[in-house]
Image (cartoon, rainbow, N blue to C red; front, side, top):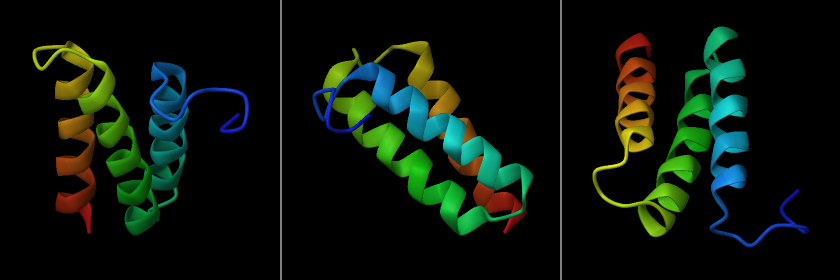
Length: 68
């Protein structure tokens, strides 16, 4: 997917987030955080600062950090 989409494409952010969710479900919090951070990096470049997806990503990061 990385080869077919630009590096800041929102669908790529969604994919990273979904992979992070799978890792979190498996209690692999470090891997989840890596994916959430990739999600956030893309979102900060491609979405307005008040977009609701940013809140979701920050929540996912917080949840993974709390669970560690």
